[in-house]
Amino acid sequence: MLDPDLKKLLTVLDWETNQKFKSVRSGGFFHFAKGRGLEFKEVRPYYFGDDTRYIDWNVTSRTGEVHVKEYYEEQDLPIMVLVDVSKSMQGKKKKAALQLACFLSLFHVRIGNRVRIILFSDNIYHSGKELKRKEEVDLEFKSIIKKAEQLSSKKTDYNKALEKTYQISSKYSIVYWLSDFTYFQGFESRKGLFQTWDEYAIWIEEESFEIQLPFWFRIFALSDSEAGNSLTFQSNLKQDQMNFKKTFGNKGITVRPEMKLSKQILGLFKGIRI
Image (cartoon, rainbow, N blue to C red; front, side, top):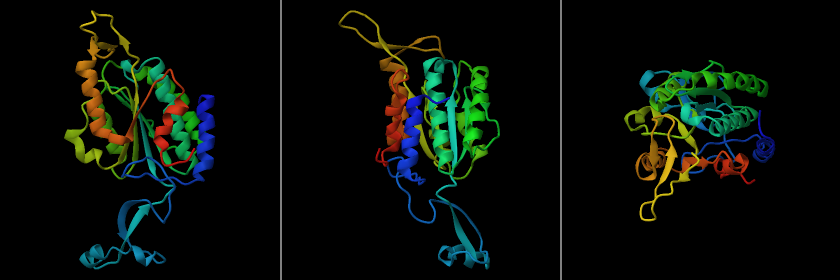
């Protein structure tokens, strides 16, 4: 499924990271991880043999029973990959999104994380499978390619996708959004859900073209598959870009389907020396 360049990058990253992965909330995407755990998971009763350094004294004093804090292990992170398959994502954009989704899935299972794939438009598809091995990823994507065609719709409901993801994984997860973010309004009204996870985004950029108008009035337009209109740079596209930046900040990158994806995706791996 993967293009040769992405396969090569996957091999390089697998060697460079030396099976170590870490998500950082403070800026970059990935860098070398150290220590016992990575992100807080839950407070649970103490079991014989637990490290006493992780006793939660507040809960212990309140309940009268010894409790410890548990963390996700460095190689036990839940990963959610959300792929927009609406009408505006047809052709090269959909192919690029599925390539990158497969790449991210394989990267994470190689370092011991658990991956789920969600397809969305104004409908949602999730097979219910949690992927832990390369063979499982390969089988899942053979099915997903067919489902992506069936799920294609004129509208994109980001909030529905967000809510479905939260139903599946209400605790800390790393979540990737792959979309062209057409009519994207952000998640301000659902900030509580959104802030549960580390959220990263890959904007599959629409190929733009310049309409040849008189020199005193030139604008850029985009073909808009979802509304049947053209989007001017001054209107919807500009607003989408602002909402994207406001929502994801430096955890969002832009890629062009017609260019080598392996070079563009490196923005996700700022902390790894390639």
